[in-house]
Image (cartoon, rainbow, N blue to C red; front, side, top):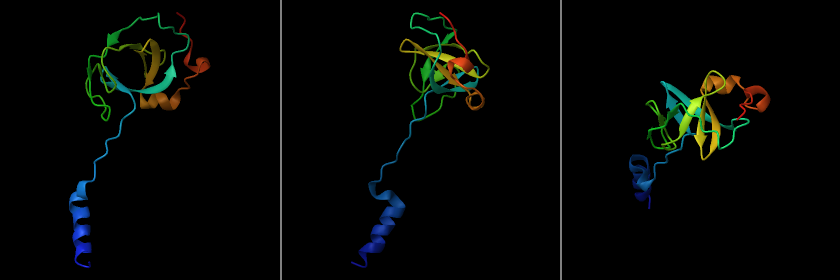
Length: 123
């Protein structure tokens, strides 16, 4: 039994003995004009699914465990329209009929995404 313990420890340390490598999903992200935007999880105030004015479309994607590295690329799918947000550092993405606010790290730290602070975009 004493001879098996070092062998078992060596197996665990050197090979992982079949341990699975975990991959972690990143939050939804999109890159536009060499800027990475991350979802805030907040809808654009005052928008309906009928309002579909877009400036661009997401045309490529990476795995959800990665961050986009090219313009018009996301880690959550293709075909979604987007437009410039109301504030610097924000982007609005049309997902399943709803406009969702995405923001840079700096904008996420400095903005409040409530109606009173972000603003109301009427139809």
